[in-house]
Length: 122
Figure 1 (cartoon, rainbow, N blue to C red):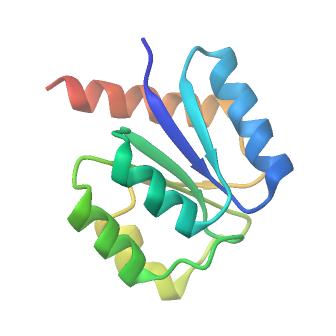
Figure 2: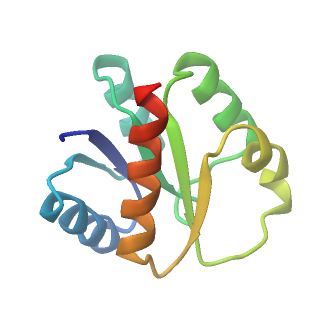
C-alpha cells in the first residue's frame, strides 16, 4: 500500500533518516525543509499525512489551524525532543493526530501511519 507522506524538518539529516525508514516500508515520501516549501507542495499534491518537526520549524497554533482548514483530510504527526509545548496546546488537542518524541522510534511512526490508513478506509 503506497501512501504519500510529507516529512517536514529543517534538519536535513534527520529528515532523510525518517524518509529512509518509511521508504524501506514502501511508503511514498517527500522531504520538505521549510514551511514555505510545505505550503507550495500541498498546493499541488494530495497527501494523507505530514510528519512535522515542532523543534526545527517555526510553527504556531495559527499555522496548524490554517493547515487543517485548507487541508482537512491531512493527518499531522508532530516530532519533538520536548515533552511539553504550552504554545501549541490548542493545536495538539485539536489539529495534531499524534506527537512523537525524538529520537524517533521507527515502529511508533509505522504504527501511527497504519492507524491513519485504517482511519481513512472508513
